[in-house]
Image (cartoon, rainbow, N blue to C red):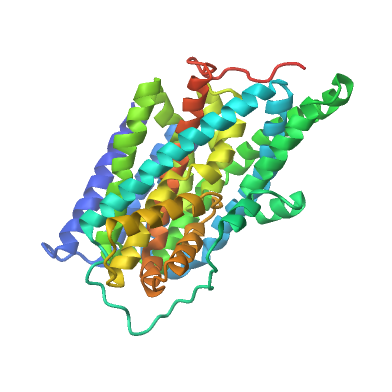
Length: 459
């Protein structure tokens, strides 16, 4: 009976902590800071008790975000030093990405020897990605033109931040960046798209060799993929610590007060992303028949990891595993999610359209709708191939500013809250890519409604 009361106790404790904080903030009553800290930590203790009862990794990750935020707020000096733990988690995740992609793609392509399906999945994925990301760009453009968050901002007298100069990307640069020149170099630099291209070509080549030559490599790829999924499970036990440390560092070095600064820009992005989820992704999911409740449960953990670490790459292994459990065949998961990390970054493309026009507004440059469209169509090209790592979109934004002779100083203003913006857009990236796997699986007629289907069969 007592165990059943834990969720209720946790809820009451959170309510009391929130009430005390609000009363103190608005000076309705004077409450000493030590008392507020004690009340908040009692509420967190109740949440930890709930997590011990729940025994769910997703619950632990979500609660660790609350604990991290509190540590960052109460002990900022300690919190800033906790970044090493989040970096350890990200490094371990990055070791998984390349072998996991290689093994699952090679086995998915060569193991089924259906090269026509690979081509079919390829064009279907690209069509879907292009349509959805284009809609995302226009929603970002629409949102910033309504809010006009950049209008009236004055340039700061002194810039305390420095960013490396970025040369404008040409179409040739973008195309060449897709293809690997050295697979070891691509793995070392975390170039997901280059790894995907190499793995797809390797899988096609393996499918074309004789059976006796193909079988050993297929067995090795199958074994490697299974090992890497188990490896992921081991690393994920460290996820609550890594995620909590990431949030603690963010709050510790930026402070909760950053939410007040540049609120209009931040609110514009969050509202635009929510609108994209509700008006675009949800209707797509309902139209193709995605089991929404199961889908939301499946993406909860990968999205929470992406939100805390601001890295799509950190969520990739878990997202692949959860989509396979949901009922998407491994061959589709292995092809669509990694490809989507270069061509289907919905949150990032929406943000780039919004941020590019914000820069123009802040600089006092009045752009016609036609000029804004040119920027949008440029971003349609330059946003492809963005690595799923923290703040990679800043590089694209700097390149776009250079291409259109826009000033750089508004980007420094964005940099101040970019981490908070990155949390939201990265989460939407992961949601969009997970949904894409289900859409393509439905399109191919291979989605298993019951889920947890054994994809691996004896060769």
